[in-house]
Structure formats: C-alpha cells, structure tokens
Length: 412
Image (tube, helix red, strand yellow):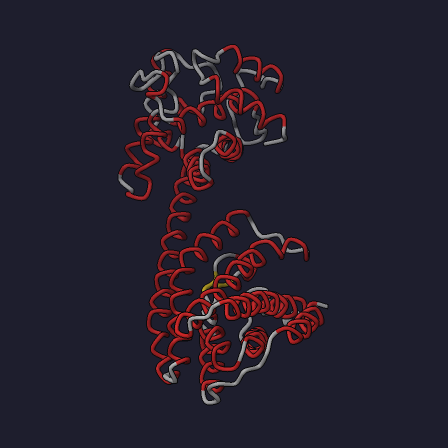
C-alpha cells in the first residue's frame, strides 16, 4: 500500500516537475554518493528511527538533471537501502517498513522538488538561483521529512516513545544547518561543472555522523548511570521501586504544566528517580523498621538528602540535579531541612519533587516487598486535602494547584 502511495506521489510530481539534464556525468556520480551516504545511517532510537545523509546529493541531482530526477533518485536509493541494508524494523523483511520508508522519501523529496521549482522560477539572478533553489529544496525536504519520521509511525501501528521523538527532533535540528550548507555546496559544484569534487563533501558529513554517534553514546551512558544508581537503591530497599517510578511520572508531568521546558521536565523525572539515592547510606535497620521511628532515628534518616547530593556531585553529568536532590525536603515556611531554605530560595524542581514525593508517600502501597506498614495508605481525596492543608507552609501553592490538575487528568 505504501509503495503504491509513493508511486502515485511521484507520478503527480512528474506532471509539474521537469527533467533538465545539464550535466550527464553528474547523473552517475551523485546517485552513487547518495547510495553510499544512505548506507551510513545513525540510529536515533528504538524501532528503527534513523538519520541518513543523502540529502546534499539528492539536491545536487536537482541541479544536474531537474527536480524530478532528484525525487526519483531519493526514492530508488531509499528502496535499495531498505531492502539490502535495513534497520531494526526491516530485519524481518517487512514490506510494511520498506513501503513506508519509500513513501516518506517520495513525499519529502516531492516537497523539496516543488520548493526548488518555485524558487527557481521567481529568482532572476543566475548565480543566486542555484543557491536559493537548492536551499529551498533542502529546507522543504528536511522539515517535512522530520515531521513524517517523528509522527507518521503512530498512524501505522508503531508508536515511538516521546523520548525517541524528542531525540530525533533534537538531532535532526542540529544537523539541519550543516545539511543545508552541504546541499548548497554540492549544488554549486554541479552548477559549475565541478561535480567530481562532490565526494569531498563526505568529509564534513562523516564528521557530523561521528559527532551524533558520540553524543548518542554519552546519552546512553547517562541513562545507564541513572538506571544503575536506581537499581542499587531498589536492591537495598525493594519498597522504593514503584514509589520512585510514580514520583517520577507525576513530577515530570507537573514540571511540564508549570512551564518548564521538555528537557527540564525530563531532568526533573530523572532527579525524581534519584531523589532518595542517599538512603543507601542510611542504616537499613532504621529504613526498614516496621514501626514509627524515634526522634534520633528520624534525625539520622533526614541526612539522606545531603548524602544523595554528595553522591551525585561526584558525577559531572548530574551537576544540575545536585541542589534539587539536596533541597527536596525544604519547606516554603523555612522549617524544612537540611538548610532551612524558604520560598523561592528553594529550587522549583525541588518543590515539584517534594509534592509528588509526599503525595505518593501518603497514598502508595507496594504489597509483598516489605514496605513499612505502621500506617494505612490514604485515599486520593484525603491526600489531596493534606496537600492543600500544607499549601503555603510546607508546599508551594502553585505546585500543589498544578499537581491537582495532573491527578485530575489521570497523570498517574
């Protein structure tokens, strides 16, 4: 079905886009470079999301033989790479994924070809025409392709995680400037008959690919470190497992509704997973005590926020989170710990974690894992009433208000 869709789209484009062969030899060089670049993808997430580097050579084809040949080149190269190279979604030989990849290529290249044709018609300057038309092709293709890659899979039964989509958008946006620049460079070389120099553009493209791969590995190490620290706490105190996951979800959604950026909200979720990491330095007999703690025991437990911030301070990538972890038990009225901060002196991230943590501590249950059972969990209504009662003294009123909205919308 998707292969048929791509054929229909290319046929429609053929009615409006001309074939204008200006440099016959370039018609052999550029498709070969495009195919080579297609075989050097970067996997951006699970389920086969990939970034390839064919666009500069596809745009060069528009200059060498007209936008229709550029569209056909992209479709054929994508088809060949999908069949013989594949990816996580293609190793099964799925016609579905081959067809969808080809369809996305056809749609994106068609948009690029249309943009190229429009700008080419309205630009009178001969020298500027190649530059502006090529740039229009690259932008039109790149924007639509990014939208399709990050969203289209959902409509065909393959839901990508929000994190995957954000990662694709972030990396795609970072590469867009170099992508467009390389497209213009290739196009100018072709226009001047220097298409044989086009392979040199593989050097900066390879550098971009290497940079993206390194960034991806750093992010993987970051995630693995969070998982390892979280697992360490869960092994020592199993009752914390579900608690941390619930707090992370509630805190992350609250952060978004409070206007924090998606990146910041993700960091709040990660900090929520680690907010009790300092408990690994607390006496296990006290933490796992089935009854109410004595004053002396409670004072000992209160040091976990200091211990946690000290643990994370030794890892550079967690630098921003350190004060959030240290101050997640501060109070708006200044009667919290460890530093007695009040009001806006407390980081907003700490205030968010504090509300989510308190709510789940009041309502959460993890039967069968040895949680302390000296009190029965509260109902949702009773816990919300307690948050409202402590709003303005223990908790930030604005955070409490937004947190209630998260609960009302099914945030848990």
